[in-house]
Length: 274
Image (cartoon, rainbow, N blue to C red):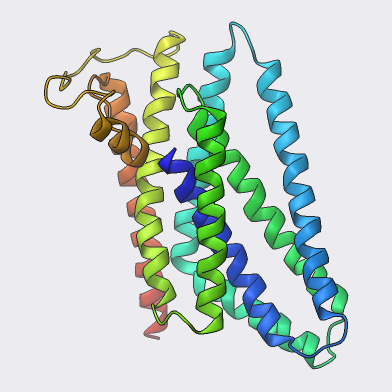
């Protein structure tokens, strides 16, 4: 439940950033509000189509192939989360700069208002589609109810939209990088948690060996069903009785994503010195 809220918050904030920048850069232009709202509506409609298609595919995978389907969804979600964190570690600032450039180009007459519509529609579609995939991944094999997902997602959506509005309205003086640093850390843990869940499904399907099941048992200290255990499972994938393969997938995912993020930042800093 908490993971869903975090993911929705992060994706909503990114879309709100782009919308806010473009809105601020095109104040006073006739027809600008219509294009902004139209772009948002088109992006949301596209994300709904993606959600419907994803749901249809998941329904088709019922029966014996459900574990493998869950593992596939989780694996793809892990890849997307990894790409998301790695890409944003280097290109987050560039994304905001590009939005400003487009807004100024529209204001200066170099680009038409249709560009505003297209850029916002694509931004909302991209973030909405990623949200759908990540939420399906976080729900795969879990006991989270649809109501819990809807509640958590709604809270994340509202918080992300409000934070984006307040940041660009000037009410919040908190550097944007702090938001992204905090959520990047949480998303990193969510990616590792999803990788661990994927390993569990692969073991259940007899695709891979378990390498010891359970590798340890901390139920006496903190059970999976306790309030703290449920919270830690949602935030960082805690499991009181993990298999050895789950631990391998979890740790490997953390190391690979962190190393890739470090390498990109190191290369960026090296290039900037010349």
